[in-house]
Amino acid sequence: MSHQTVIVLDFGGQYNQLIARRVRECQVYCEVKPYTTPLDQLKAMDPIGIIFTGGPNSVYLDSSPKVDPEIFTWGVPILGICYGCQLMAHLLGGQVTEAQDNSAREYGKTVTYYDTACRLFKGLPARGISWMSHGDYMARVPEGFALTAHSDACPNVAIADEARGFYGVQFHPEVNHTENGVAMIRNFLYEVCGAKGDWTMGDYCRTAIAAIREKVGQGKVLLALSGGVDSSVCAALLAEAVGRQLTCVFVDHGLMRKNEGDEVQAAFDRWDINFIRVDAEERFLGKLAGVDDPERKRKIIGEEFIRVFEEEARKIGKVDFLAQGTIYPDVIESGAGDAAVIKSHHNVGGLPDFVDFKEIIEPLRLLFKDEVRQLGRELGLPEYLVMRQPFPGPGLAIRILGAITKEKADLLREADFIFRDEIARAGEDRSLSQYFAVLTNTRSVGVMGDGRTYDYTLALRAVTTSDFMTADWARIPYEVLDRISVRIVNEVQGINRIVYDITSKPPATIEWE
Ligand code: XMP
Image 1 (cartoon, rainbow, N blue to C red):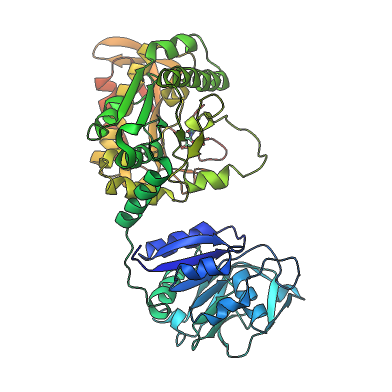
Image 2: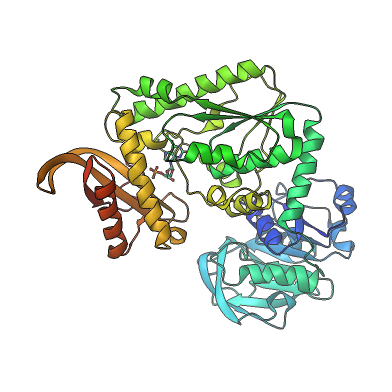
């Protein structure tokens, strides 16, 4: 590969992939490597720079992760972050100790003062907020290093040996809470390492395709396509890489939004792959008939999904690889421990148990959502698919309160379509994280023309959120709400009242079931 490479040496910190992502944002190729990687392998990568990540340990303990100090003799610039900074100080003859009093132990947003003569902080404001998370303290900095940042509590927040290109920061420049953090990483890459910015999503795409081809060889790949952003981008990437060796199974459970099934299918027309669309509406609605308990709905759909997929997989026979559109936040969240089950999420992720395959491949595993979207664009997926808001696996089933019927699903589909259409027309779509209609199980009296109506109440839900763990109800302008209300009641027969959900999460959840 011809592009410049930066190594992110992983010491077990929680933000390591975020560091890698920041480096990619700066158009520089990087790879995250465990700290145990043999030195000659790292050297063979011919890096222009190395970043030591944070980590949960204390460098002065014998058991904590270390790196062979020979790495400092290569003439390659190094940026140490948090633990990485302390490790650099420790290995180069400084002294790191446990902070003796609370003042030197820092967590959270901290006002920090920077020496802008230092290349790391070049061109940036001399004062800003940084995100700290360290209990240890550099009592003595190594020879040759200068102090280049401090906080009110701590004199040595950053150190630098400009001659050798070694920099250390106690805070986390990779997180959003650190003002100008990305600019600092950019300075390290461009001012110190001499980066040229020769890495783009196009390169990422080509490299990923080559890697998939190499791994898959002549093998067969199976993917359960849900139509969501992640599985669609995963499908497009695989389609580009292995063409007809790929089979996508798209189970249309009849609880998709208006036009959604056709849109998903159309997006894959351009690739010569095996695309199986299973029209399973009747089957799903049959199983769901009369069921009004939200958890039972979810279970039924999850199980039925697996049944359908299993039947299709059996027809295909043995496959070598099962592909999944897992992205990096899924990897983190699935390790989140034993939090209470609020809703049993149904995703297509739980499939491997029954399909006869050799190995799982997850080509998006190291990407963040917006990078996945960018990759989707690079692969030529249409904007409406790439920018699609999250849509739950059980689909409209959990947006129809009470028992589900085809008539109710059709009502909701129409109303939801109008809602989304008006939001897009008003240009509100970019500022909302998720917005949809819910068909309540309540009917109320209305008057239309000269006649009495007794029809359903439709709820509109729109939220803003960064992580979907908490969410705020969106302040959609009244005029827009008014247009939506008028249109739905006029155009969708069977709905005569519209309400707007003004509850945040918590205490409510985003979906109603
Ligand atoms: P809640 O309702 O829990 O939703 O606040 C948080 C986010 O998760 C989505 N969601 C699901 N996604 N399968 C999914 O793939 C599910 O079963 C499911 N249930 C909720 C919801 O749309 C929101 O984005």
